[in-house]
Length: 98
Image 1 (cartoon, helix red, strand yellow):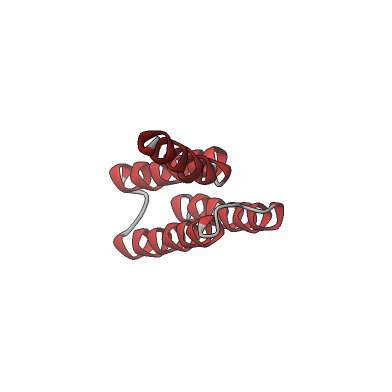
Image 2 (cartoon, one colour):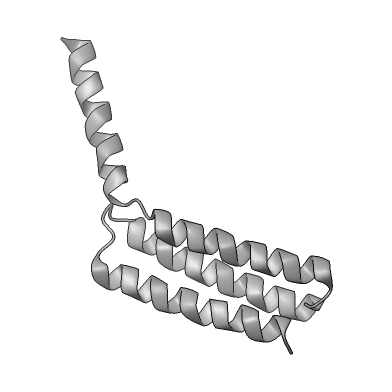
């Protein structure tokens, strides 16, 4: 009986975290990080530009962490993160092409 209760509790805890899954946000963050890395390797980004872009990535990650804190990412929070990622994507483009 005790093992069933523990298994049920584990299921409830892990299923709550699955509601806050953000695979599209994570994939976009990963792609943007790779764009920054490629800019560093190719020499298109200077050190100060890289620092600014990394701070932007950290800001977007903080928004995502705040949204996930309560276990459910609302459509408003997703939209806010999407806007922040769009701004960051534009900054990456402009820094790499200036």
